[in-house]
Image 1 (cartoon, rainbow over the protein chains, first blue to last red):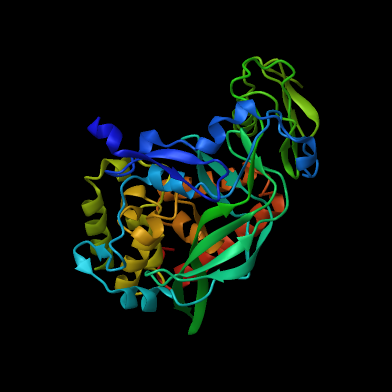
Image 2 (spheres, chains in turn orange, blue):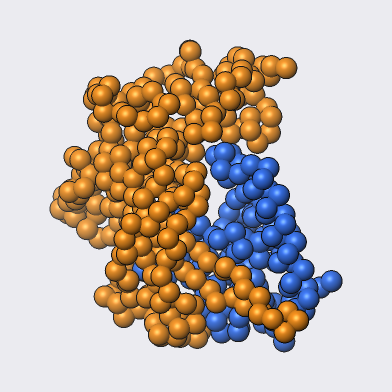
Length: 274
Length: 133
C-alpha cells in the first residue's frame, strides 16, 4: 500500500494522452513507458493525416505528437539538479562555470545549419535512433542553461526518417541542440591551423512520430520494403529494419524475409538474389 | 609529460568496466587525447568531460543528462581527430560512418571528401609535431 502511495501519474501536455507511472522516490529505467503509444493498436490511422512524400500511411495507426521528454528523463535514471549550483569535477579538480565557458567557447552561438542530425528517443521503453539526411536549419535560440553552452532549435529536413528498428518514422519536426565547441588550434609553419572540434548534443524532438508497423501482427507475409534516397519505405512487419541493416552491412539475407534495395529484390525468402 | 598525463587518465578510467568494454561511446580519455593536440591540458580536460558520450560521465552533468538520451553529433573534424587517437577509437569512428551509410547519408563523394580532409588534418598534426611521422 505504501508503495502504491508512492506512485502517481505524470501527464505531459505535449504528448497526447501521455501518462506514465513514476515512482516519487525517483525515476526507474525499467518502468519507462510512453503511455501515448500503449493504446496505439486500438487506433485506426487517418489516411489523410499523412502527407509524407513517397511513403504510405502507417500500416498500423497511431501518431504521437510532442517530445517524450518525461520518458527520456525516466530512462536516464535518477539524476538530480540541485538548482544550478553544480560544478563539474575532473579527476578531483573543480572548475567553475566561467572556467568552462571561457575555455570551451561556450559563449559562441550554434551554427546556422547542422548536417545529417541524429537523435534518440525512448518509445515504449526502447531507445529508437532517428538519423536524418540533409540540413537542419536553425530557427531560434534556446536560453542557455547553467553550463553556458549555446543552445538553439533546428527545423529538421522534411523527409521520411525511419527509426533504426523500423517501427517508427517521422517526416519533419524540430530538435534542440546544445553546442559544445572547442577552440582547437595549432601552429603549422608559423600559421594557425583551425579545426572544428565540436559536439552537437541533439535533444528535445518536437513533432509527430508515426508508427510504421504493428509488432503484434506476427508473421511476415507480404513483407517488403524499399531503400530509396529518401529513406526506407513500404515496411510491413516487424524486423524489416534490422533485416535491411543486416543486408547493407554484411550482404547477408535474413531467413524468410524479402529485402528490396532501391527497388531491386536482393533477398527472396531469405535467399540472396544474384 | 603529456603522454604521462594521458596514461594517468587511462589508468584512472581503467577500473570502470563500462568504459573498458565499450565500443559505442568515446571515453573522456579518448576525447582528451584528441583535444590535447590543439588546446591546453586544462582546456582539453574540461571539454573532454563535456564532450564524452559515456553515459556514466554524462550522468554527472545535469544540464546534459537531463535533456534525454545522449546523442552526440560530433563534427566531422572532431571525428577525424578521434580517428587518430587509437585503433579502438578509429573503429568507433568507422562505426559512426557506417551508421551514416546505412541511412544513405554518406556516399562515395562524402567518403572522398572525408579521406581528403583526414589526410589534410593528419599532415598538419604531423607537421605541428602532434602526431608521429
